[in-house]
Image (tube, rainbow, N blue to C red):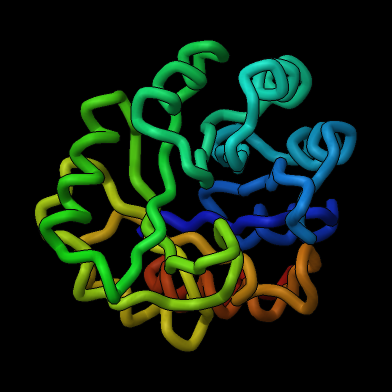
Length: 223
């Protein structure tokens, strides 16, 4: 199971996540978010990451010129489109900066079915997405709500690797290990406050997900 920690604003938190073995770090480039970072902040945070830890740039309906400026200033690896972008828009924007990308889909238990979730995933797969992220729907927010959706709506035979988000924490993430997903994404479940991570919560989350790695507790001694 792959793990992405999202919404970093503090260098110490990034360093701790790396020591714990996180696979990807998400930086939020959406000014209304309390977890948003500037280009200058993002440069500092991304520079602290070693090889094999991916930098994911979370954007929400970002115009092409702003995305190009972002790509020219911050060495991120993957775009996470988290707004209302269509498959065609995602494809066009990602090609403009020559980056791999994934799309976040907000799942509404009152309207969605396994079949239409699968169909939506297929449309982004056809446009060239590398993965799909499933998050809980909120009428007024694009993400980061800490809410969980009905996991029975996750399709078994997705055309893209699925990353699960929404309301995850150290207490419930172990229940995801049998789901048909590729990875998990957490932000609020590892925080003291929005944008400020809790080292103990990060450690507990990683221990719950990557059990094999944590058989030897020496990994935690330095933390």
